Image (tube, rainbow, N blue to C red; front, top):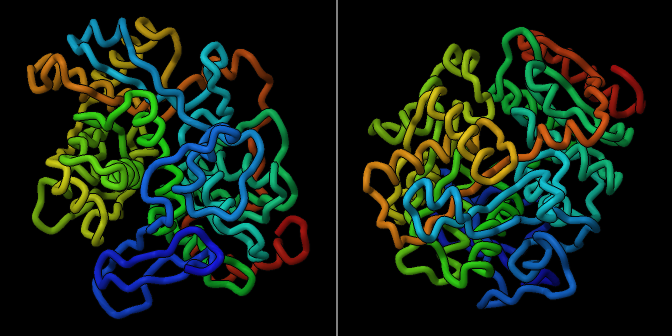
Amino acid sequence: MNDRHYALRCTACERRYDDDGCLLTCPAPHEPAYLRTEYAAMSLRPCPQERGLFRYREWLPIREVSPDAPGTLVYRSAELGRRLGLGQLWIAFHGYWPDRGAFAETGTFKELEAAAVLGRRAGRQETLVVSSAGNTAAAFAAAGSRSSTPCLLVVPETMLGRLSARERRHPHVRLISLGGGADYTDAIAFAGRLAALPGFEAEGGGWNVARRDGLATVMLAAYEAIGRTPDHYFQAVGSGVGAIAAHEAAVRLGADPPPRLVLCQNDSCAPLYRAWLSADGAADDRERARTSSTPELTNRQPPYLVRGGVRDALKESGGVVTASGDAAATEAMELFLTCEGIDIERPAAFALAALREEAEGGLIPRDAVVLLNVTGGGRERFRRDHRLLPAAPDLRLTREQALRDEALERVHHMCESGGQA
């Protein structure tokens, strides 16, 4: 190993690499495959003087920690568990719930990703390019502003409301919105083109080991709270990266067998669900994504067939992908608010809807240890407690404009000049 406390290993060819803070893929010629981290620490050793996710810094690919790092609130649910007939229901909550010590202002577990990614690339000067359906951009806007890290965020125009915040973004954090019917997949494509420009660097999404290991701290926090890994793990997914991370963490913890993954989507647009049902991993179409009530769950190009990706995690865990309707999600949101006393995001409600269906169908033993990842919550509470500023893009483009080279030139000029494009 180099001066870092970990190395990277390819899941396809097993080649091992020292990390430069931005390596996303194995350069050897073979099928698409994720890199995974291998840490010097062979067992989980939480760092008592750290808070949030950096409590698990020995199992994070980072060079630097940041103050006020987010973390995961894990607790055993009494009332919701009783309503579902589950004696060992545990909640991993992410968001704003000050009564219980949760202060993630952007309201989702994407803050774990942002903190870990920026901690991994500490010292690099390139502008980090991040594509998002909204929540990831909000997390990087907050984390990048706190650390004065140059970031370029690309989001569909319809999701700008997700970036409302108490404070204005740091000038080094710039925001581009894509209109004209653009969705998350369009944002990913345009961000990829921008990242190829001189002075820019791709964040990488699920290909970034820091993003996955940041999300993996959900399972680490649960392991510390419960004293073991769960039997079943429920999570709403868009790309499925958070579920892959949970699986990788469980394997690293020595779980045998690993928790059964139950990945949950909205049946109005369920690319991963349809990929799981088909032999070729086919994704969904643009129209379904455009009309879905949960754009966060509509990644039309999820890492399903990638070595070390969603399909492998499902096979290794005996997992499934489910799809529920909007009515079931609405009922789940009301149920959680009634039982737990806090609002949850609509994507998280699809995970609860799936859990409710399995529990009421007798598919989960009453004494099974179940972990429900509430990937976002408390946003309504946060709006009541604080005055928010609307997000103002530095550049607005249509989907058609983003396909032209002129758009790249405008962005490059904006970042070089420090002003508007």
